[in-house]
Length: 362
Image (cartoon, rainbow, N blue to C red; front, side, top):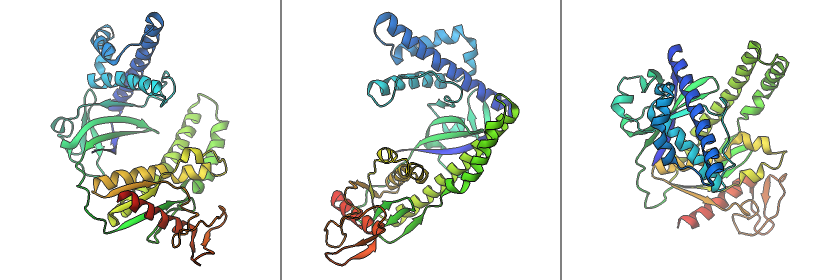
């Protein structure tokens, strides 16, 4: 099983200049190889492959000595990104590949990490052509498990994303503790055990600050240093909100996985739900997809079972008698006219989700 963990790095000024140079050269190569593919197809009626472009890389480096500043694995990964972009386009997973500017090419990848070479110095990570960079190791990991190192510049900070291989425990033979999870906006999580995880409303709490900074930014002259400062301030605000959300969802998912053996959740189509402009901002803020992702990989990591169920009628079905009890979005209580059951509508839905999940899990 492959998981990715992100760590903050703190390069020196000299190292930061080298990192920016690496990003610039990788982006330059990306745009060049993309243009090369387009021209080749126009002239020959067929496309270039990754292998063909990789075979041309030594000649390109010889003609452009500046590329010697970048590790060869990082350059090969650039070609792989172009190839992946075309594959995603042909398989209708994405649009036609576009040329990248500095705002849309912000990372490079070293595809073969080595524990002794990259993590031989405690508190540092060695990045070829850059040197030993200070690593904020807020969470321990096994260097021998790290497979790839992705260096990313995001909102004025540098990070490394370490992809590592971990051994998930064997699946448990029986389920001692099971839980169904209903996800909402007022409360992010309501479980069939009666637990409720409130929505901290990170975005709403910071909205006034964001609007204030956005107004100041709009009044600054384009290209000025003051505009750049205002832009960085706005980026830092959004970064803080993102970090708060990520931290909270990690804690929620960890608690749920530690306390339960079978976790059942709705398979929500959030892209369709986001079309409702009245709810779009609230849905984006609670990040149901991110929570689902965290639950899924943590269940695999800790040897638990994760099941996604069809959300159809989970709110409308009575969890006691199984009859359909129609209710609108404004109705927050489930009142069954058939068996007399009265309880919170989300709690009722969580119980139905658990029942469906147990059937699927056998």
